[in-house]
Length: 318
Ligand SMILES: [Zn+2]
Image (cartoon, rainbow, N blue to C red; front, side):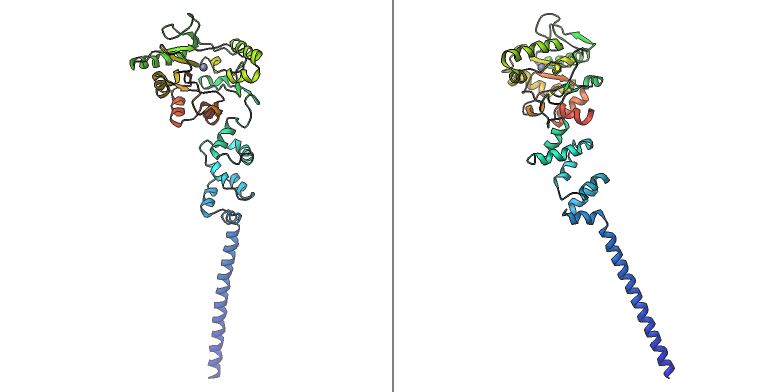
């Protein structure tokens, strides 16, 4: 009898031992899982203060960006910045310091300004433009053409389509062909387009600019003319288009021809280069007559996305 009771007691202890052992293992696994979770980026980001939604967004970025979030205090604007359409990885550090300096700017403006060098004053930091990009080359207040750049396929515009002395209007052949296609379609719609200004030599620009500068000072000269080498007209890709009945820069903007050009020029590869409301971006006052040839694909993108060529260039071509 005593022997059986002793056996029962032993089984009882073994059972308790097994239960304790299993309990310990479960506890250990839990502790280990918790430890592992604390090592995850998700947990660390939540500890920094990001919400679950923000954490999910951050974890979609590459490792380098995730590390940036892990090593800095909470800043949700950087999530917005990285999700901007025209975000460029090479500019990351510049965006951050510019955003800190100008905290009132939207992330869209931060991206744009850095991409196109607007963090610098016009002419402050300038670069020779890449002429190998041909019809996609950029000429603005940061990118210039050298004194000796002359397009090698300039053709003379017929006086049927241009003002001025015979032979005085010249543009690149590819531009002329596109212009003639556009001219015909515009003519069918009842509009008679006329080119008022086209290719300008470096020397022309120099004399115009120097003239303003010598008589009214550099600030005035900069407000009214491009510095030599910084005019798009030297590319042979830019034309000032008016109509046969309206050559006034004061009234052309409200003409039917101007409206027609604005809505149709891109179909032929032309963009309104200095649009209204984009003066801060282009650095040039609204010019309803200044069209730049960039080819149909680029012109269509710029028209549909309502951006400037400066922005397009920075994102897609530079
Ligand atoms: Zn012009």
